[in-house]
Amino acid sequence: MSGYADRAPGYLTFRVAPQDGPIAAFAEQEAWEARERYPELLGVGLGEFFHARELDTGGWELSEYGNDTPQGARDSLGSHFRMRAKAAEEAGDAKSQKTWMSGTLRMDREVVDDLRVHGEHFRIVRAAKFVRLGNAGPEPPRPSDPDPAEVGEGYREPRRTKGFVVDPYTSTGLADSLLRLDLVQFVGPGPGAPEDVRRDARRAARDYPGGVLLPAVFMVAERTDGEWQSHNPGASHSTPQGARDALAGWLRVMAPFTLRLSDEKKAEYARAADKLDEKRGNSLSVDGTRFRVTRVERLVRIGPDGPEGPRPSDYDPEPPIEVHTRQLKEQGLWEDDEDEPVELDERTRELQALWEAEEERRAAVKERKARQRRG
Image (cartoon, rainbow, N blue to C red):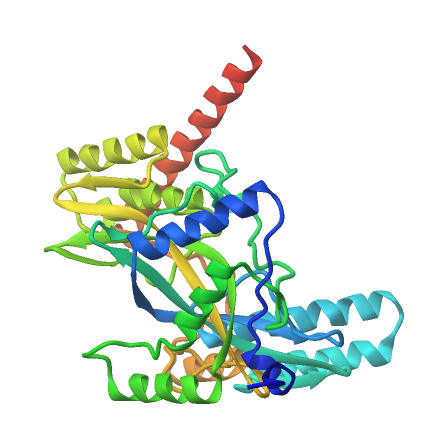
């Protein structure tokens, strides 16, 4: 059909362009190979939520950090407004300071996902997460994925969503464009999901038929009883090393605590963590469970009014902070005296001891590496 491109809505635009440079060409080749080796796409149950600002030049600029609940993103936006208010106050602009604080107070009191403050348009944005699966399991990190952090330092790496603009007019390579096409057609949850979740997924596919890929993140998958599942669905990391560090921390601290491991088992889990640190691999097995650092694709759906916001069925257990505080007071669970010493129970002291031992181990490793560099 002639002239179709001129009449296509912007949110349905897929702009394909050659990606310049040898690294980009290598990443494009890997993306093609991933389609063959890991052909199945599987949705990760929990979404990821950002606050975003609409740009006059087009698109929506995301916050650096995502949250595993919509309210977490709302609280983050409220903090952003508070910082803007402080900057206005320091600049002597009382009117702007008052306007930004009004936005802060509204976020503290109301569940609001779209608003304008001081002439700027903000929205809570939902990103869906997906993993590729093949005969060997979920896709691990690719050689072209940035992984610059040292062992134990993954948390220091900035999120790749910092300054990212959700804009369907931004061009991508052919492989990523085909992935976008696959994902916007992916309705979502499989058999067994609650009906409200399935209904919201179908509505999202209808109302937000376009999409933009975010930079990949990494999480830990585990295989037990022949099935792969997310080790911690709400946690993702900007680099493979961040995911390795999280797994190593779980093996050394949280596994002994939550699984109530014997001293012998604690040592076994600690040896597995040491091996992970030493090899910087993406897979390991311990105590009958196989773990894998897994690459996660993310998509923000786009419709006529912009990016998709939270869905009614999204996990969102906590209300805004002022509402939550009032509820706790009504239930008699709020303590006004912050100076009152907190008495730790036996289990909490046990967890504290595990974390203190881990901090001592990390400090010793850091000192040893520093001596080696000096030597």
